[in-house]
Length: 219
Image (tube, one colour):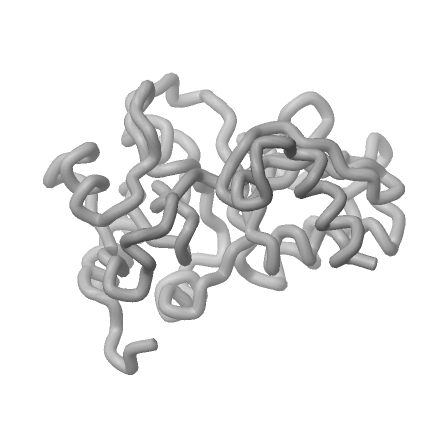
């Protein structure tokens, strides 16, 4: 891992501070993501309705601890959810409590009584992410196109007006990249598969194989 900052991190910080969307990398085999301090900026960059739901990026422990009292999860399930977000890097639908009103900043990530959460905190991005503890995030694609697996593809798709942080040198160009798997967790910790992605596809076409793998690894 390099000791020098990733290219364009300074420009990305400036853009985020200005309320603009930026493109950031994930570790392989995940694709790049588009993120901003407002959901409107994320959606505008993707070319879709600005009020469409987006994931809340729970990359800071303080954000997670602020959310935890509002989540309808038993203690063991709460620990499972954090592991899935931070270690498995999935996108997770988490049920919310009816008796604990949510902070207003969670509203753009609310879907049918669940919060849409993403929790990766890739170390090369840490200097940038720690400056912006509250971000909204979605896969780095314009509507109708597959998510960008490389910085060059992201730049081509989003154009010169959107800053791209290039971390391809830290990624595996030969990997079969895909957006994140989406799971839903129940109050007792039961898991359901919602959307195919890099994590479950690595275990074959049947998502139940991935869920069985998770059950074993989380025990």
